[in-house]
Length: 426
Image (tube, rainbow, N blue to C red):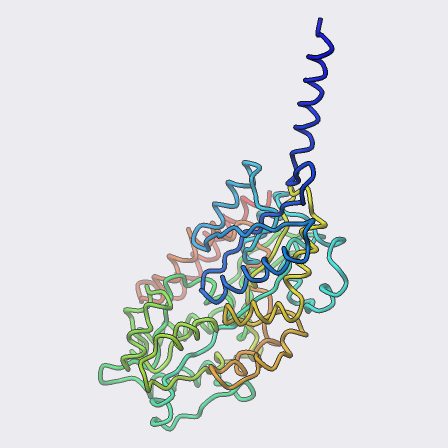
């Protein structure tokens, strides 16, 4: 039989254990862990400054900044979710959320988001984080793919310079790169180490969809005429016209910059944020400019997977986490985050900021493309990561190098790809 002193001790320990969970000390503030994937110096600084400003004005809700990495975020998050150690606030990209959302790891934010935030971000952006009937992330930064060009080379060539109002067509783009190439120089360098997202997102301009949802809700792959336009253009530039460098197909975007600065390539298709590296690394006197990506049957439409902020389903302080998100994504703060990452904000108020409409570093060219950005085609496809790694990436790489033809590319994407997706839709 327990003595009163022992019983009192047990009760005290039990109560202490209960009160110490959930990120709050007995008499202390709520503590939220915010895992950020910011990596550029300006972006990291902007995020840390905003956390510091929040903490200075919200003594009852403390936010701890946790540094994550894009290179390992999917596996790291999966491990933390399964181990019950996920951060409260999660920075990721919309094309990485599907399995986490359907797996029950993320909070449905539909009834938690403030009206200001819901109305400020366009519906087309919210579609990137909507899975089933729920919204599982706030899309806040995005970037179009653009052509970064050697301005001197283009001016001397006399080719028509495209604008967002009058872009090149895909056929015109191929013709111009053919005109610019020759004598050991190339009209374009495609950095396609990871070819899938670039191909699918640019294919929206030509009406490409690839993924089709039936009346039963099941997704299947169909490689139609619109899906062929962009892959055929790249393939023919490399293998027929010889206007595109074959050696950059296995390279990342940064790998092409030395050759670009050295006058080896007239243009490089890159994400809009690469302007920061170019502005910092370009040799003195090197003149570069940003051009819109080519347009197809659907104009300048382009798929994007915005950066997102989500709340872990296991977080005991969801309302406090959403309050911090609301602060972080106020228009003035969203502009700071966009400038730090050299990307575009999703918010309509932030997009109006004069700092995003300057000719310096061609901010205005990118901002003019914002209205044409759409959810990436693979956005809602369960099993997409496996399909991309095991089927699509090797198939596109072999096609672009000339090792296989378009018929074999179609067969692999459709037949092999549908076998992969079927396992996720039983």
